[in-house]
Image 1: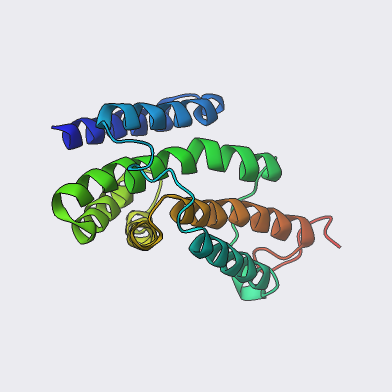
Image 2: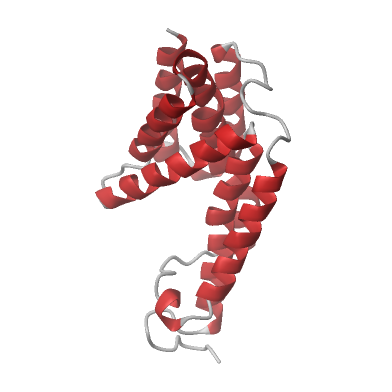
Length: 203
């Protein structure tokens, strides 16, 4: 019953993130994460709120940062950065961690993963949370392949949760992919070629 309640709350939060005001998300995300921990009956440590896995986290963040640093220097890769941001630093350092990473990691790799791991083991916990993580990203305006990609990412993040023993590694990797990605896209927009031709004013 606890798993059903947790999944129900996750579903309600998904509706809120889709239809609620964007300015509220950095506040409601952490609050919803705290609600999930309370409803689940798991302790903070059981939900993954520890510093375990910091070595995995540090190594992965460095690799992701290096990957983006290389990508923004390759013309073919630069064309993949299609999104522009009015306030990239605010988005990367405030909106991404608070409105996205905190809730999604506590929900999928924290509370839900912990409950499923307790009852069915780490493999089942990783598989189920990865599928739900992919479904979480379904939206009419997004291609269905986004759900597949995020589902695969959910597997990798679940593995990090299992081997790292906590949320630190998957949360920092999640932030690095999204947050550093925002800064990389802003760099591409600011410095020139994005779609195969110089942008106006770039030099």
